[in-house]
Length: 114
Image 1 (cartoon, one colour):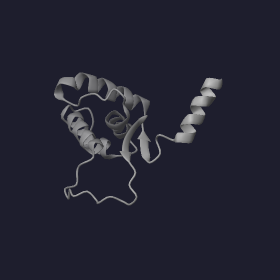
Image 2 (cartoon, one colour; image 1 turned 90 degrees about the vertical axis):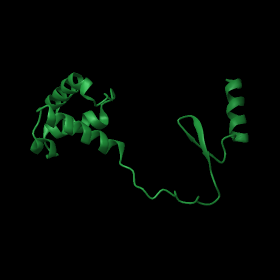
Image 3 (tube, rainbow, N blue to C red; image 1 turned 180 degrees about the horizontal axis):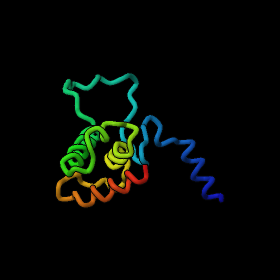
């Protein structure tokens, strides 16, 4: 208990992280007294989520698993399953033709869930 108290007090007193932003237990950047210059890139980038969902939508339509109307209707199980597979599913399956079997299997189960 004494050792833990001593370590906590030392860390609190010296604050080795002061002036730095800590993300995921690693120091990423240092704080600056004023805002930095805005990014110089003027080309907007496409969100990875939008790219992933559009790729998945294309695969599902080509495979004949759902209709365009079902995939566009945000209240449909097909849309919710597609969105889950693209954005939430922790397996993060590679959306390529070679993985079509796994995609079909997970998409079908997601439709039943939703």
